[in-house]
Image (cartoon, rainbow, N blue to C red; front, side, top):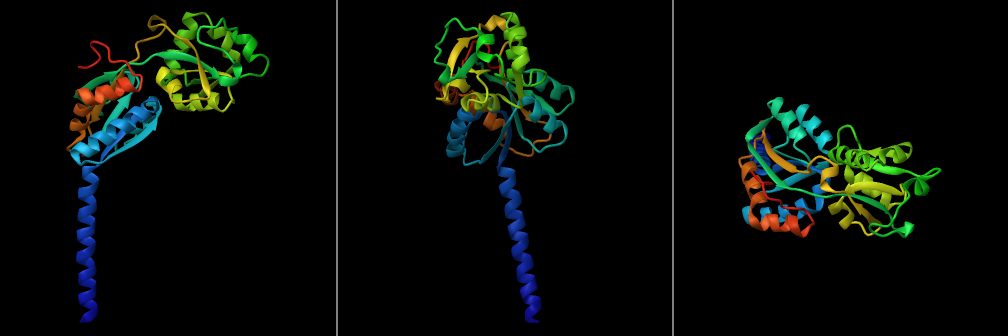
Length: 260
């Protein structure tokens, strides 16, 4: 008899543990977010967790990679993309709650160089001279990652793409681009101004004008498979004034019409 009592006690304990795990999991908001948002989202998430008591778990990567993971069934509650194209694609696939979409902020696209180049903003820069013969120019994937799409468009607009194309090294996301330049593994690269702001080993060389590339807009949605009752609350928080102040503090732009 004692062994049976022990087994029953263990079974009850396991059930209680399993139920508590389920409750805990349902309270956690799983967020897939563009890599360039890491610093600001880390800050806004702490504020949200303190205010709501709800835990947020964020996975950072390129918007294209995250969207494809959602297409393959990854369990995300919220998707925040560095452009609206991937949001539209997921909407076409019926993988998001379309009425949940909010536009959070904008950004600037910039050319950066490793600080050892000793160049300054708006110096007359000969890219080919810097890169030749064995240099590298870092940029996120130009076929799918927003920063890469914007970057190639801007370089083409300024008739610089043909100069840098032979030296291009494409990365999975904009933070990987930043890392290559910071480590000196690439002499030059294209990132967002907010990325350049958080890395002391790179120098801001040029700010690309808005008209040189498609509009940069961070768009957030709740996925259609979300199991979190708090996902919409998290998005609402990101549009509130306290959270938007944090976006501004981290260098993002809050332009008229950014929010829906």
